[in-house]
Length: 290
Image (tube, rainbow, N blue to C red; front, side, top):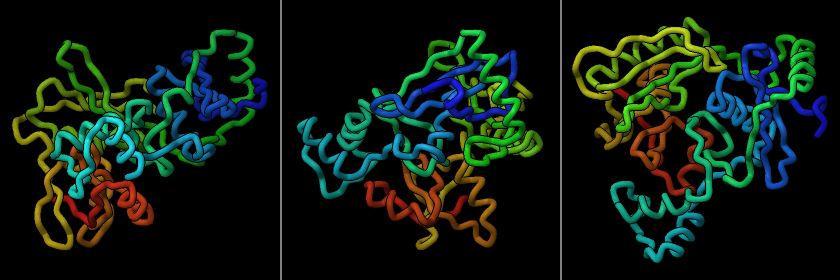
């Protein structure tokens, strides 16, 4: 695909201080997109959001058939009680099913949480002429956003020190305006009190540091519980930041649909997508967070 035909995911963020990346998706690499970002991790985050809106066929999900096939390949007998995320054999099946997939950490994607690992790659554009050509196109596009109209400019990211002493970042916990993200970061930091080696930071969409909110004090790691709306019973597992936000924003009793992921974290899912997640083998419930 010629440079002038390749879409730009975030034209309004073109900056000479940022790196320019070109991503190729699909079995034949025929879905291309440029991304301006401060790091390849930030670029991937923006690229998959663009794919979710403009080339959803690139994304995929795991259904019960995929999991049963993985169990057969692993020589594990499928149990009627599955999915059971406390079962080590089921966890082994999930890991086998995900072996050739790139797992996407976003909880807000509509069309899948995986990309086949052999169906995407990227490179940083270092040719100055190409950078200038893409920057000129981005300027012509002005403020038009090519990623489906999302208008968020900042994100809240949790960073933690690993066992090797190096810092690593989780997927964005929240996106919005800078003011919204600063407010959310304050509340998020409050929930992380007592968790050693943790930083809550606000970054620009491209990954540029804006501010860090201190994590202090000493109470439980999450400090929130998930309840089954039908029975009122507390559910095993912790809520994701996205679920907390959606429950808080839902009004009334804060009831929303959620599914339990492989890490035993309850993730928000739109009500219309809940039946599909259930058919894929996930535990799906109407819940509220308190």
